[in-house]
Amino acid sequence: MAPQTSSFNQNRRILSTKMASRACLAALAASGARTSAFSVGRHGVKSITALSPSVNLFRDSTPVIPRTPHTFQLHMSSTEAAPTALSAPRVKTSEAKISDELVSIKGWVKTVRKQKTLAFVEVNDGSNMSGIQCVLPFDQVDEATIAEIENLTTGCSVHAIGKIVESQGKQAFELSATSLRLVGSCPGETFPLAKKRHSLEYLRTIAHLRPRTNTIAAVARVRSTLAGSIHSFLQNHGFQYVQTPLITASDCEGAGEMFRVTTLNTDDVASLPRAKDKDGKELPGVDYGEDFFGKAAFLTVSGQLGGETYACALGDVYTFGPTFRAENSQTTRHLAEFWMVEPEMAFADLTSAMNNAESMLKAVVGDVLDKCDEDLEFFAKFFDKGLKDRLLKLRDKPFVRCSYRDAIGYLQEEIAKDPSKWQFPDVEFGTDLATEHERWLAETKFESAVFVYNYPKKIKAFYMRDNDEDGGETVNAMDLLVPGVGELVGGSQREERLDVLVEKMKELDLDVDDYWWYLDLRRFGSVPHAGYGLGFERLVTYVTGIENIRDAIAYPRYPGNAEF
Image 1: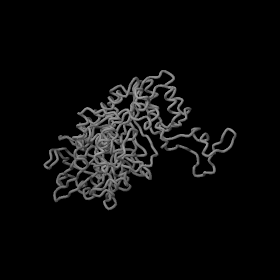
Image 2: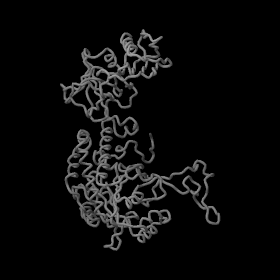
Image 3: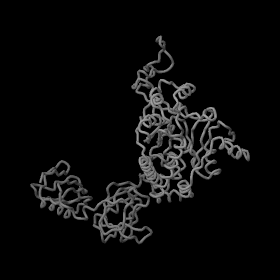
Image 4: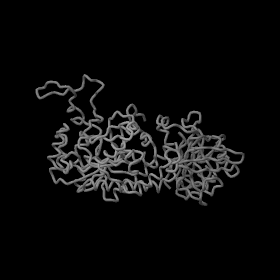
């Protein structure tokens, strides 16, 4: 057997026989040292973690029994199958089921209840909402476990071993534990998450700990399921996943609300290179030709333009990644950093984009209904009582399709009944619909998800295709409005005609030279193509019933906040 190293702080010796390793275990047992984790192999102990400062268990290959409890670590070679109690496989609480086999449960303590003859420890490993109750009868566990129970507090991490049995309480099953060890302590007097409900506003101030709460953990699980389902749906429908750059020189939306990326020393304004005209005369502004990228660069607001280039080669593609917008908004619907799902389809029109968006949303919401029932029950209880009915309706009912002109007519008719009920009562052709307008259409008028299409050209982005039938007054664009949120998806058929696109860019004062590569798609084998963008955090809020988008992402970025 190849020699292995055993470490006890600075004292290192080699253990090479089964006899020596068994002697080590005997020494531990005799000393009363509290072993927190160990495993045994064919040739001896593989690893031991116990509670002790610095001990040399071996002197000239002879075990030395410590006289008092100590903290030490032992690591040795092992190839022999370990006894069941020492190698119990770890089981996630979401996958736990009644069995005669010993298993390990590792997680964080939610509650501890101690009685005269036993203790109840609720442990959650994050894989589901309920976790598992560990029952520890004092006459069936070792003394070390009894001692550890005294040190348990809410928030500490533990490793418990036992059998999963039918519960005598409200839960279906529980862990009948034979041992439990404290892995990481959590002082109750300083732990920010005391055993009480906290506001979501407070939890944002401790965003690094808030995933341990029921609400944020449930959001994270639903978010994960949604992300996986989106990837699965699109790839199963022949879409290729493309990773477009986060740093760009292009403004996809033409709105100018972008974060600048620079390595210039902005702390020393006098040192900044100044822009100059062709005669060498200084102009207002900075010469970004001297910057890292040789030009002005920004964080992207969308992966769409890059996605289009690959769609015009691979057919159907999608991007799924972070995007950024420097919009000074403190609303519950906006973030400065957010994730977008952006499919792009070659040889496609607006109807193709609407059909794909509808099919995808029905599929991913259906997955969440199937896989996250416990979390959805929680959200329905504490946040939105009608949540599951709303999700079922979205999954099962065809989406309504309504032209923008018709939508404006419906709104004008409704607002005329009592304008005082509306924050924005002035609605006419060309109005950019506000959230209250969008939600009324989805929640009241149609009681359904609804595609509003053919928007006025002047309120949409430059790359959207002009409609021929109305002289270019509208563009072939759509927004998907859903109850409880408003706009969830925005998309369009892209303008594939080079001359029309160049003219539109000039009207918006966009530098055509900055988009030379984008225009090449129209020069070389142009095809009709369409796509859409799905705001991922908005989808999370819709599916969970969470009102504030800042609770739908791990670390929200918004004006005045970039903590953590």
